[in-house]
Length: 627
Image 1 (cartoon, rainbow, N blue to C red):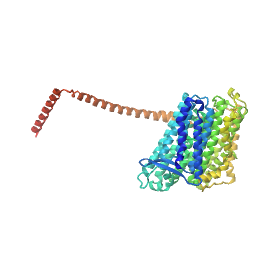
Image 2 (cartoon, rainbow, N blue to C red):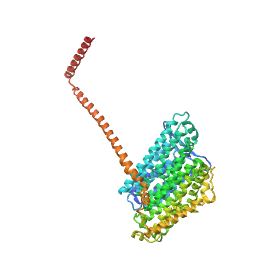
Image 3 (cartoon, rainbow, N blue to C red):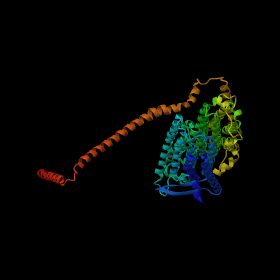
Image 4 (cartoon, one colour):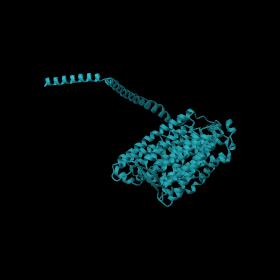
């Protein structure tokens, strides 16, 4: 019975080669088989959910090598994540059949996305950190392939490399963190599999006692470094805006269902280790998340590329999730439940926003500058309404699901303040609300209101309604998922506590959201009427240049430190290799010389024998004289 749950990730894996083969011969059928496999995977996940209504977990594992096992571990946290990944991936995959229909390489696209979804689902259900890391790496590989899918565009090829290299920094930290845990646990008596996820999360207190809270904090912070890179948290967020060069459905998949949510899931999955580590471990998670939330919101406000605006919104919302997990160190495991609920809600409305953007870009021939759009509400009314639903959900306007999910995180941050006396996370998250509403509605107003500001915008139109079906489903969920808030929390954590702050505190997020919308309209008005030019403003220039972090990484760290260092190491490595090669050549020459002795002539051998014996007798006589 349990073995059927391995099909959760095996079914999409089957689609990987089959999609390529089907599409190679019948390209118009590309995407159908992978969609069926993802649907079957979703059905199995739902079956697992029904099973877990009456059971604690599903666990199956086998010995791989030495003390490393492999298998699946599915508990309440896992099944929620797997359900989100499979459902959102299915919606995006179905829409991609329309979006990619004219691409000559679409069969390769669907093969690669099948592997991408396989890796993400495998990561989610893995029972061991080693297996988790292997799937984690496949996720990184697939992101490289898909971001650079249109590799003939220099920007796409460059963005793929940037994403791959930046996330490798996090992966290195992750694997070092695993190494710290393994080396400290492997010699403890009675532990059969030190990196087994069930063992780690169910024995976190004993692990902390055995290896010490400080050592455990070091391991968790290193692992968190992997999550920072994967989930695009400050300061390793720089890859994700450039990753918009791939197909927009890839952006939807990365931002909503797969790659960037993996880091949040990793920290939520291993939360017990963070909880029993030294307190500063979760402090770091809290402040990185809260700072990223407002920092990315500020950057999103000055972007003109519709996809980059949505990219920065993803970074910001992931910051809210990370902060929620961090504050759980004070308010309890409820913070993890809040983070996971927002992760699911975010997946729904972010997939909706990206697919609505994809519809716009298809109609406008990939025109991405929102200042060249305008007037699309009349040209594309259905798409406009769908994107409006996504925008108000992102801005946390009641009664959308975003209002419930993000509002509870902010309330939790206020509870964190009342319990710890630290108000900074709450302030960062609450002011992040202003920037969130401002950047998403600045985008919305410039895209849909007023008159068309380009010829392409003049000719824009909605596609057939059938193609928008996945978006309509996601729009419905964006409006209605709020009704499952409390049951969701209780499914993750039966003892969940939802703090309700004083009324005047509770309404601040809503007030700030509407303030942000007002600011967005003012910006829109002054932009379209050319009332003000802020391009020379020093604050604008600093923000527009992303606080010069990309400049720091590229022009200074990469070009002035890493490249020279790599050159020195490479030169020394080549010198060492050359020395080894030269030594080998000398031995080869000596061997060639000795080989000349082997002539096959008996007379030649007898001559050498006599000479050798003569030399030997002379040496013996000399030694005798010396004595």
